[in-house]
Image (cartoon, rainbow, N blue to C red; front, top):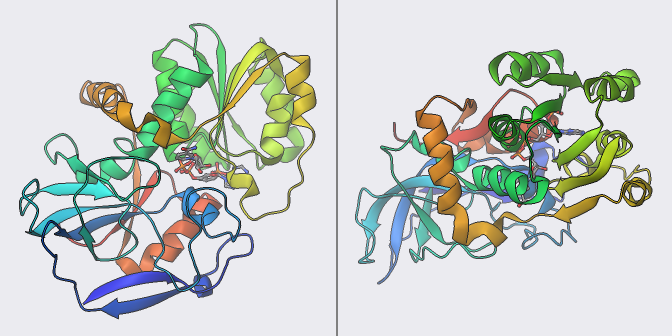
Length: 340
Ligand SMILES: NC(=O)c1ccc[n+]([C@@H]2O[C@H](COP(=O)([O-])OP(=O)(O)OC[C@H]3O[C@@H](n4cnc5c(N)ncnc54)[C@H](OP(=O)(O)O)[C@@H]3O)[C@@H](O)[C@H]2O)c1
């Protein structure tokens, strides 16, 4: 049987376990041209929460009763597609389920179900959901193309201990920047300073001191802001921009389904003549291999550090997403389903 996670109710704010249900259906046989993939890992990503809102406007809204869409990496167990052999590894937007049937297209266009071939010799296959997957491409291009990191300049990253933020900050360090991370909790602050070698790290849960701490950590103001969160953290960052600062608006996890208590960032952007640009990873699908090449090189030469939080079994998928959104644990959250 193929077990799947379904959306049972539209979450209000943070999802609850009761917003999800499970189904079990016979495993489908691939038709001509199709292949069957058994999941090794599923991914829990903030964008899944966004797609659960009725008017998400980001990708396709997940319907009530529909399978929760999310990324999977797994192995081909049956193939009726000449481009894929049994035993091949593939990653794609295949949903929170234990088995997926795919047409095997490799085109990675907007929100599509296209597959990416995964080389298990390059790195553990779970990294194709993290540092060598969609979050890796996001960190790389939003930093390089939009933040335009220049040696000696100050780059601030929010959700800095997260999958995207931790990689973006490390790449900014490799580019010679002064990197300041904002994260929730003292364990994450220690992680950023000790393991990732950021120049400074601030615990935003200590809200009374966020402004003071940020201004002290950025005496030359902020030349580039890699914004993963929006919300009140970003309001404080925006008030300390250097002239001609660049802002990559990558995520809005602080505003996903929660109260919209923003200040007026436009006022700060106009004062600083800053450039703020939205980012969607799919615009860079055709250049993903550039990012993977650079990131693999840094990984192999020990210049990058990453962590994973591994949940076990499809039943743990909803809790994995809740943990991602709450910031529980350090590292990319993946759900182990089968395989080594
Ligand atoms: N635009 C694109 O194409 C694209 C592609 C991939 C990802 N993204 C976005 O990039 C961001 C990071 O993604 P990720 O996969 O690396 O997730 P992540 O950073 O590993 O997880 C989300 C983090 O958000 C932080 N957070 C939660 N509530 C917050 C709040 N109210 N204020 C501030 N921070 C809060 C938590 O960290 P703390 O414990 O530090 O609070 C949590 O760990 C997300 O916003 C995601 O949607 C965008």
